[in-house]
Length: 318
Image (cartoon, rainbow, N blue to C red; front, side):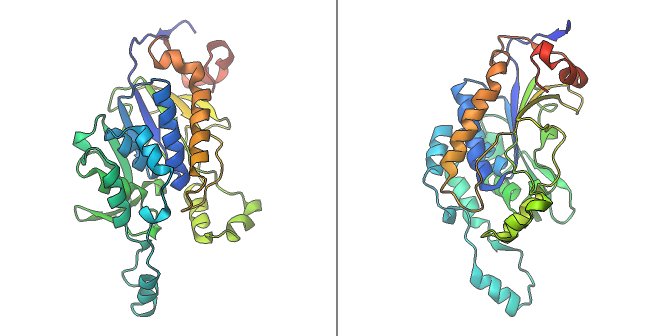
């Protein structure tokens, strides 16, 4: 590896994946670890749970303050299903107009309360949230306008939440189309390093199909299996991997997929354990790269193939 890319102050961005309630706690732990390691960020993007946490962070809300909110939060703050409305829609209207157990209003109200600013344009760092337009089936990257509404649109899990209306169109969980929107950030913001925190649960195997069928929220487990069945390009069979951005900018990509305790929707009781586990694993897996992330060491200029084949020589762990 004779060719190295020398950066005195690397531009670093983060990608926060979908992941339900567990993802919210996990991404918060990830951000606490970055703060503890004094890693400065220039841009962020997120999908679903990642959009919620990323938006709150980008708005300037201190991560520890947000973590304190999560330590005592109850599901009723962000999810209020109306069983009466469900029965009325099914019996009286034969299902017409019924699009989800819960309105997104409570989640929007909750997110608004956590934000330091209310629009994308006011954020301390550039932030993007991915959702899916349910009319066109195409993904939408929100980068301007009302922050809380776009965050919740990105996290509005189909069936569980009603779609969120923005400028006359309706949007749902971006995880339906892309678990982590890596293509929205590094090339656009001229980043040198991208850190992907993937907190999406792995799909249940066929042999374990009885587990979701016997769970308390069977419908949610089935949705999880459908949404999270395909694993994105950047993942490997290891908890940490190194890639190159495939979009053309060749940014150095560090991918963390922590092993986390289970946390079923919409339970929050074990959330602090998930948060702590994610924080500890982030500190562990980023330790070999800390000098590079702080600009005290060179960024390897190796290709994807070289990252995989020369990992032992260069310190790149593919």
